[in-house]
Length: 104
Image 1 (tube, one colour):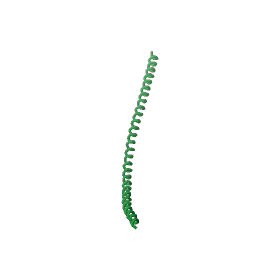
Image 2 (cartoon, rainbow, N blue to C red):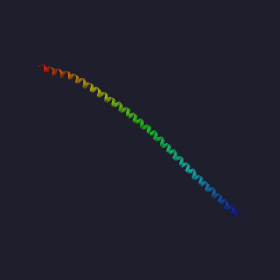
Image 3 (cartoon, helix red, strand yellow):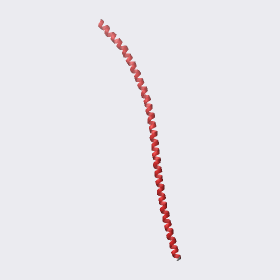
Image 4 (cartoon, rainbow, N blue to C red):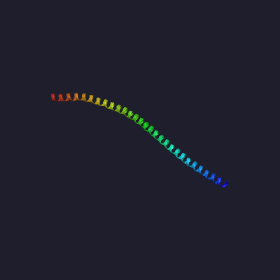
């Protein structure tokens, strides 16, 4: 009878140990799954932040380039205007020379 009690106690202990191991494995799998989910969320958040930051940098660079392009364009327009005005003056001189040449 004592032997049966000892064997029963051993079987019960093995069953309890097996259940404990099974529960530990389930909990470990749950922890790993949660960690993967958290890592994925962190990656997505940081990817989004990075894209936002990159877009801000691109916008600033675009604004800077547009400002520089406007300055260059304005300088070009001024140079073109001066050239056009100079052409008008030279045109008038050329017309006078050609007319004077016909008069002679």
